[in-house]
Length: 282
Image (tube, rainbow, N blue to C red; front, side):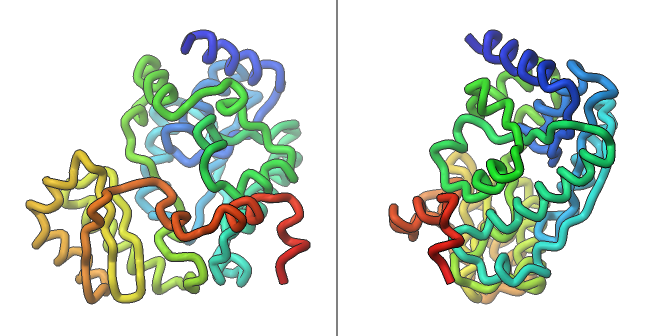
């Protein structure tokens, strides 16, 4: 079954003819870029988007992976913190981020004579709160992993079978996801979260998030690592407080992707992902 899905993925990419891969160095985009490069060769380019709301270490890791896999890599920059619509942190915040990113990637693709921009959205994303998917539809972005029906666990398994170094890489996300909706996103706030998470990563904790609630940091740790994190609680507290937080709490439910969406009603979730959301909001 998994081999059939991978064949579907390869065939879909082959039929596109030429592609620009929205590459982050994460599990999904690395498998996508590796496969597109294998299928299309010089007709594929991976583009790394450098952003002020991501950790610098992510870009360094993505470059290293691209070199190891022999990918053709190009880099561009986006400036989310310059967009007040993004910084007010509404439920559809990701729409504004992806609109800037996809618009830029489409421009790069046209300049290079590449017809299609593809991204690493997978089948699991269909069941999550993803306003950025609306931007993908508007810009005609193709999502081959999703079309092939590949889920995250399958992507990790395929990556391991193909010998990709990212097969067990922890899931990463924009640092803006650490703030409750409606909380202003600022450069100082992003920097505080970035430093706190760098501190926890230095302690050897792999999958976690530092959610910022004013001066309180709510630390979500993967359930399998929670006991270890508790044993390191003094070091964890010190690392987070050194970043500028006053109080540190460990979330008893542990790490879960998109936990900030828990406060949204079903109506808000639907509205923020609909194509006419902008028409119905001031």
